[in-house]
Image (cartoon, rainbow, N blue to C red; front, side, top):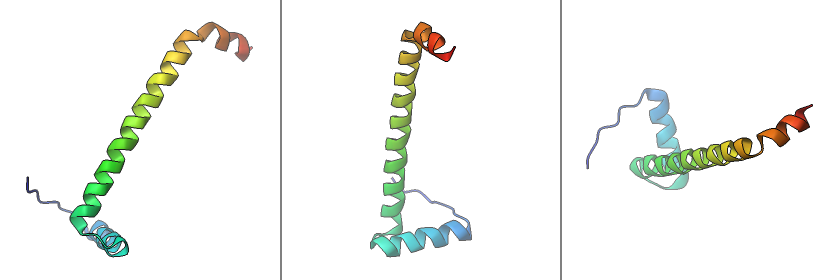
Length: 67
């Protein structure tokens, strides 16, 4: 699906520089960035969920350790 991406001059220069540095098109750089952001967001959500499970499961222990 085609899409128009509007960037300010600073971000367009950055995108151009990254594309040149990695020998990729600007579109490829945007796709890579989106993929990496999605992975990072998923990892953060899974980490938060695991933390919440441990905190709920071990609430009494954590309370005793905090004293």
